[in-house]
Image 1 (cartoon, one colour):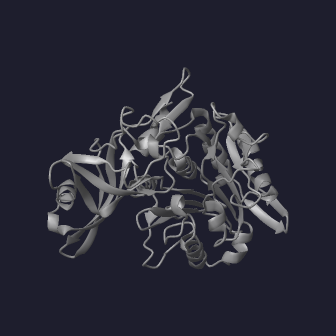
Image 2 (cartoon, rainbow, N blue to C red):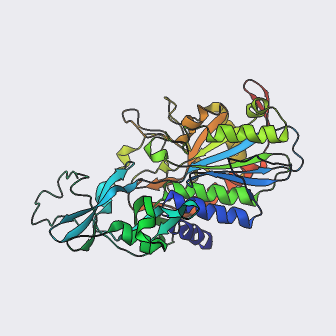
Image 3 (cartoon, rainbow, N blue to C red):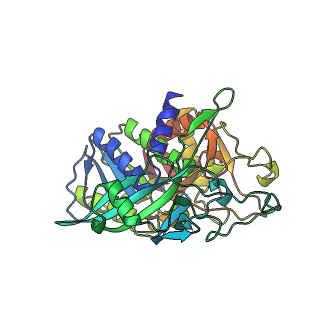
Length: 430
């Protein structure tokens, strides 16, 4: 369970996309990767290892094989954000001696799972310095607020189809008093004067460390399993593989939970532009390389629920600890098709990893992910995969400990494999 605990520690230290990317950056630097700046020229060479970030919440890292000749990209993409509540600019509401934070829901959170739970704040604070503006990451590692429930005596129907008003029911209580200077509070937390605080991007997070459970420790629960489990397992795989003949690419996008329509989201040109700059730097044709390139979109999948098995498809029913999930959708909200699935299955066989399938029930509209959005900008073969989990978008989610290892082995095999496009519908797997 040591490896699982390492991931749970990573998730706890990454309550928002800002901390996640910062923590990934540290691991890359330790492995000898060089940071690039989008505003400067990319100076690249074979055998080089590089990464570039955007807005502090998205990252693309790439490892150029020292003997690469037939250029292609093996890409695994995940996302760094999770459903939560974001603090509004004028943050303080004073009512009946309560100081509350004015928040709005980010993404599709399950509202009632955030009630009566120890919460804290994390994100970034932008401050004025003598030579310009600077970013300070903020991660308050102790409970400082709670969203209290209404007592059953005051709402006798609370257990019967209760709905929550985000502007009324979901505001966290921070402290007591008649007034509160929120910017002064932030300034003290990041070590500046109050008048230096210009703006902030701050989010609530459950201030509870992840843990394993079950009689055989076969499960684990944490905030932000969706999708830091995939972001972390794909990073571990990426860093553990040396492939002299590939350009392996690790991607973590932001804002998947709100549609990806940002400059750091999957619906931006971030990936497309970076791949083009790699090709220009190494002097090869990017479009020819894309024909032999594969992208794995890694984002978790719904497991069969123990209380509501009827919610799952009759024949495609992912179970916890039964292998990596390949996700399909007829309307292409998942990008998997027969070709991309077959290519991934070749890697699964190499790694001796079990796979299973997810589709929505035919009478149920499901979610989507970054794969189909990104493929609209970078047109390559793509497959959507994930790990089975329960309570997706809850403040605390649950997944299987065995699946964690399966994903790492599968993605290691993927990064070790070279795919050669021969003609339409035909690939060589090397």
